[in-house]
Image (cartoon, rainbow, N blue to C red; front, side, top):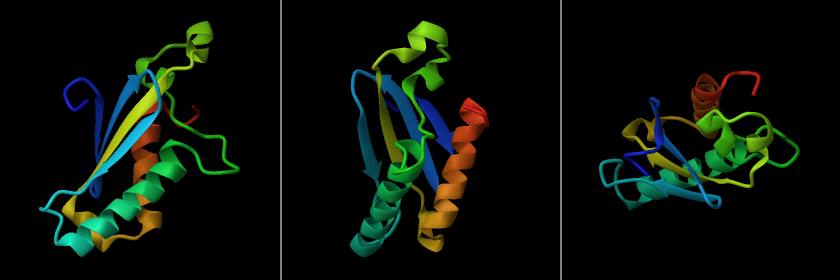
Length: 117
């Protein structure tokens, strides 16, 4: 995942994406982020951000897909390929709220797949 996937680096989070056979997600907060309380807060923020921005929140159709990462268009884009996503917290995540994290992640993803996708 870390070697072959797409890597997006932000101020608060590092995102990794890889097309896979099914949908999978993970959040990581190392001991560098802080003590157990800080790591748990960081993981809660990452889970909420992934649900809202990457995998789509209820009532919102925008969702990053595996075909967006591979550049496939047309009939191939309708495959039921999943997406593996890993979000890694950086130390700066402790100084931001969920709105800042969502905005940063959305900007990174739009930069990857294009604003109109």
